[in-house]
Image (cartoon, rainbow, N blue to C red; front, top):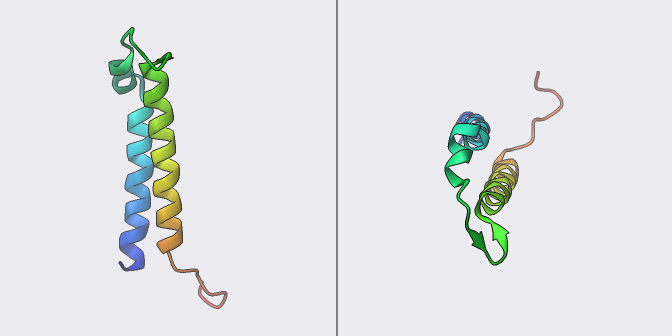
Length: 71
């Protein structure tokens, strides 16, 4: 992928993360059900959090480093 597409993907990942943590969407998982003794909304929040970290790590590893003479 070229750099411009990766930067755009990073922006989309940021906006998607913000959208997934917004109360209207996060409240969908406020059901009173336990999964292995943990509330479903806690599992949702930590799953989204981990996926955002993995996505940011993957995009960061694919992004080429800027050289110092570029400006």
